[in-house]
Image 1 (tube, rainbow, N blue to C red):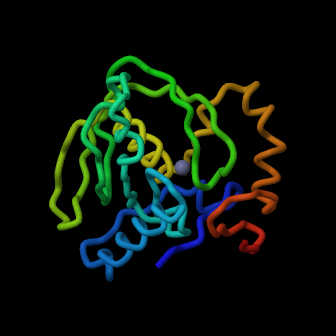
Image 2 (image 1 turned 135 degrees about the horizontal axis):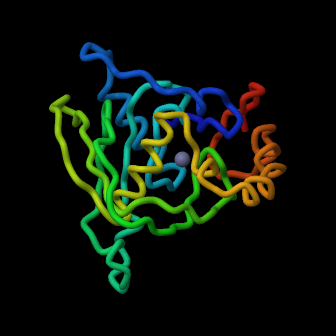
Image 3 (image 1 turned 30 degrees about the horizontal axis):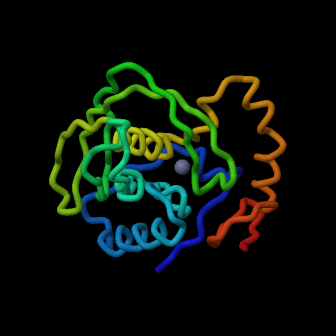
Length: 194
Ligand code: ZN
């Protein structure tokens, strides 16, 4: 099942998402639906708040970003990461910050350079609800940092400087009102869908 994606301006994107209890029903189905929703929108990451569920879960599929055989940037030369992350905890972020043009399925049409540290160490539960702790770098770390932010109510535009934020303000307001052209179904705070 493909969910509509919550657009910028909805309070669910600003809430700190809640932990998922061990007896949470139909988590497998929800994860499968999130992978389907992400693929449908050609995304490389999707967090549960983006489908209007304020719970600590995101899915990642970096395949489109690591599949160019001619890629020379080492940050994009790594195995594809396709995984669900349940109840993740950011243990630490390390390494020098680097800039990357980020986008977000909740903020269609806007791409801006965001600086983030090179590496992350993340503790999370996998789909079998086994706790794992792992380090990620390069583009995998970048996607994880962006999706993790969603669980904290943070959007990539929050990382921009004051001038950039001011320049984007009107476009963000238009997105929140549904004045946006996305090739996937969206859900707006005002209640509209398109
Ligand atoms: Zn996003």
